[in-house]
Image 1 (cartoon, rainbow, N blue to C red):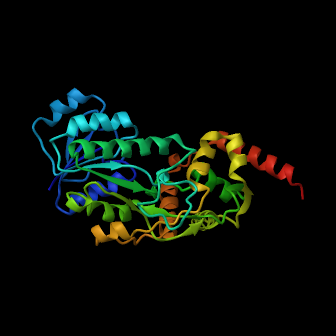
Image 2 (cartoon, rainbow, N blue to C red):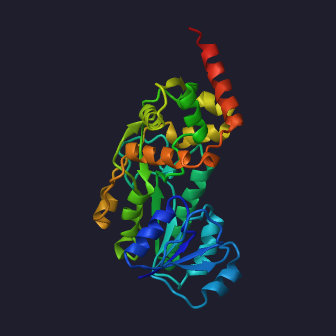
Image 3 (cartoon, rainbow, N blue to C red):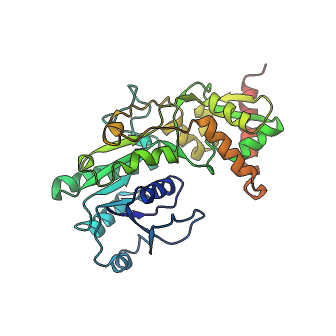
Length: 330
């Protein structure tokens, strides 16, 4: 099976690329060649910028594919461009959407692929919804063979699960107060990229996936308190001094942080993965977050240059905590 990945070396896609090659797929990667992650041995690299349509056409020549996956499409204009590029060139086009496109907060749990797409808070999610709508129109109007995949919070060893990243681990180790939104009890799903890859590869070239949408997530449910506590233990930090702050207050101080909470992380999310398991029978998550947290901390500890402390985030955290505690003096 001949497959083209636009991108293919990112946090999520790097694991899929490696597994695709391992499974014997004839994998091509179209990207600009700027990445910190290695290209898997056996993959063929086509150097190009997806935003330069004519140069991509020239680079691809007369190549055709069983499946094309664009890992870096975000707007309806991106989809229009891809339809022009890959119409008649592929038997399947896979769009990477987002589980944040689902109704937020969801009226019913668990979330299934038929849960309405409706995020009134986050433009990123709204743009992903518009992309899905555009693909459905193309499917109805010209039978453009699309599949939608909606990852939730998917990570690799470089990606700590909370706003502020390494700075939060640094605060934990120093015994400083850390901020957790809400009361920390909302449920969240955190999926290792190698687990995600097992589900994703089963969709490539799969006729039963045409015109369909799938989310691919772990079934492990953790509260935000647990996500922080497990990371703290992996880092060898003392018992955490957690301050719980309403998401609305965080948003009042920093809308970039706040919109990701109000439009995604503040509400409990539980996913029903029946649909992806039906089409990808090898999909089974085997990396629990406790193992993933250890992997992340070890990666940062392996090179002090990775341990970048964001003093602006530190100051913001301290201001929010001071404002909250000032409103509720003990």
